[in-house]
Structure formats: C-alpha cells, structure tokens
Image (cartoon, rainbow, N blue to C red):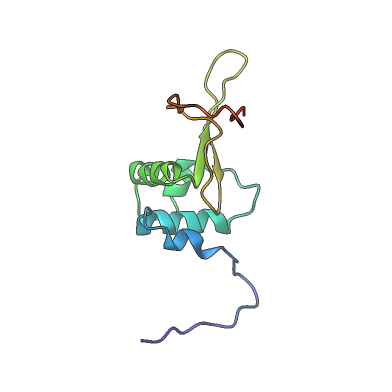
Length: 119
C-alpha cells in the first residue's frame, strides 16, 4: 500500500507523533487529542461542545477525556467561586503526558530523605 499526501500550503497542523504511538490510548482518544491539539493554544474546551464536532455522544466524549486524563494528556481543574459554587471544569491539554502535581495516593513507604519531593 502507498500513502498519498498533498502539498500543504495552509490549513495544516504540526504535532509531535509520540501520542500516536502510545499504546495506552484508544484510536478514539488519539483522534480527539489530535483534534484538540489542532485548535488555538488559548482555546477553552467544553465536553458538550467537543461532542458536537463528532458522532460521539457527550457521555462517550467524557469517557475519552477520562482516558486522556488517566494517561496524563489532559488535566481537569474545577475551582469554586467566592460563594462556594463550582466553576466550569477547565481542561488543560498536553502534547506529551504530564505527571499530576500531586497524587491522591502518595508514596509513604520508604520516603526519599536525601532529595525529598517537596512540591
């Protein structure tokens, strides 16, 4: 088989191919991540809006976002207002997997004493 490419002058995106070879990700997750990375850097993501750009339902899109989050490509942050109400969930998207700044299950057995992680 052959690959037929076109000469690109406009309407193209440059991506690191690393996530395409990440075997932890499904084809759907790879496709959604590629779509999200093709949007402008200051884009604000909403799961409902992402679902309108494909045949996937909102629930299916949320499951894909969860998969990307577990693999470290998406971080979800939900703050609170001054009144204590939840704000909209904000999604940060990364081209390479990122480690969460803190863990729900920290390492407590034999902690490092020479160079402790103090973040």
